[in-house]
Length: 474
Image 1 (cartoon, one colour):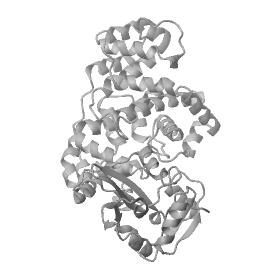
Image 2 (image 1 turned 30 degrees about the vertical axis):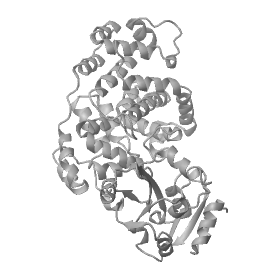
Image 3 (image 1 turned 180 degrees about the vertical axis):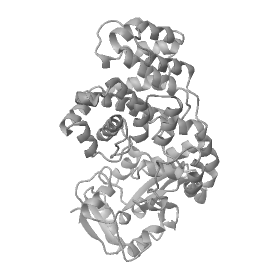
Image 4 (image 1 turned 135 degrees about the horizontal axis):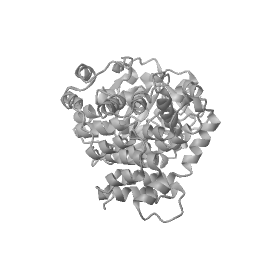
């Protein structure tokens, strides 16, 4: 077990006893703790922040969420998180392995803040990344406190246990949302969150498209009649059809060719619905849940869900085109949240950026007071979307869902877990849900093959997500 020379030298110079713990290969400190049977609260994580004055290192337990607003207020600084690549580059210049971030501000000559929860019991050991990737450093909490004597110690994080994550979400309605926000949301955010009960109205074009989906004997000309009324929509349909993703080698020079020969009626309606509905909301483009990330994830998920649906046995009676729509719309709750109270959504984006190891639902509940799947399901209900879509939006994070139309929510759940492998998912876990896989009769091998087929079209999918995000001018 070896540490980078610079880390070992620094620890030895401090003079406090420590020991090295061989850490099995793991993607996160939380996974390492589970494999080593270490209490997760004893694992130390690092967040790097920056502003015009320079860098700040924040040191806190893995089980705690950084309270970004309190932190910035106490320091009187407008701090921004360092994003993944920037953080990796900072530590790599000191010889640390990619993704390995030792909590040693003295070594890196930057100011630090440390949360007092780390030293609640000074005789308990704390464990931190040694910089080599597969080695943890164990040290008595009291010694860790002394070693970081120059850091500013305070309380600026909250335990995930204190967020009462066991409270059932299933009974929440717009009427009782206010009691939830009073309990979990900082007072200054409550007023804006309660405005979420006033859901946006579905755009008129989207309403017409939705009616078309339910129209028997639908013809291509029926779709063209609606699309031609909006030049930007018409241009988008042709643009989508020209993508190499569809494997069409002829010239796409008309709406009829685009729909009849390339996209198909169902696929066209799904993409039009997503585009029209999505453009109702104005949210930031960048950030962990910004518009760019939202559409990229939605397109990847929809494509993968459609691939998975093709594997299902006929008795399940799952419509691949409807499954695609479920994948496309499953995270629409984010758009509502960002549209109704943009300032809070901006803060939410910042919380996510610096709390990447914490389940997204916990950060949502702490910052916003409600989770995207709940708001999204309200929206789908108010817009009279198909019951399959409502179920997928409502239950797509639930591993044990047996609700009506659970096949669709399970497909989205599996797709999101698979997309974790390619970094296009808000799921922290990449483990495929056993019950969902069993009920859908999908094997791991089949699932990974479906993912590989989607991965082969990454460039085309990215182009499609950009086209959905930004309306094409006619």
